[in-house]
Length: 280
Image (cartoon, rainbow, N blue to C red; front, side, top):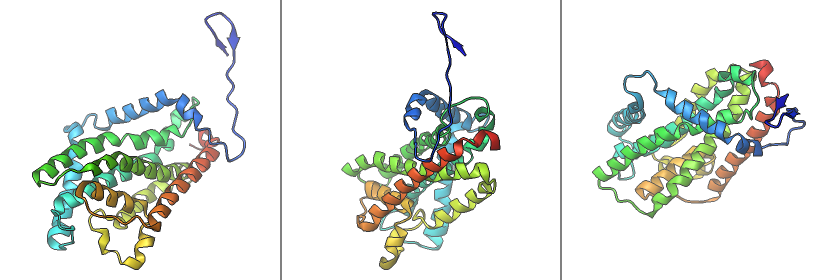
């Protein structure tokens, strides 16, 4: 029961949703301030009480670049399509780390908010969304370093840079599509938290982070393109390095897989949402 300023009373009743197919996406807009607050909270506490703070957003991709450059660039001598291997691998690392951290955080978002879920109502879908969006700041900081690297290696900027926001959005959608499924499953099957690390490691090997997708045989390329992150990283290299990418049927199939995964993931997440407070 809530009393208004005029002295009259009114009630707000929250009813459970019936059926599978009511996505209720309008609620996300109604609770947008809460979502922005959760994003800001995650950003502000991420490096709290650390000695280096936000500098970790720079150190992590740079250290990965050094390791890849030594192992795959110097020792294995993998093809970097005529570009310095350092910048070739760094361009692959940035979207991959955004995707990987987003999936890992989103998968644990519901279980990690068990106290909040049991006490108040809000669209639970806000939890994985805010966790995925929280990685954009780290990506932005690391991207500034990338721009400096491109200037250092005298790599020209072209109009293709305008595609970066679209590629960034597609990366976030892919992370959310995966994270929503894992978040809902993690509530019921706690094995998921152990599986996520293995899944991300295996997925990275199947993604051209440290190598060129040109190494994939032509007759297997259609299957390889079903991995949406291969399209993302090739897209970033197309936008930043000018390397060519073929937009055949497999690319559109990959995009279709992501949006199918996202829609079905939201449906399953909201179907399970009514049981979250009881299970967590």
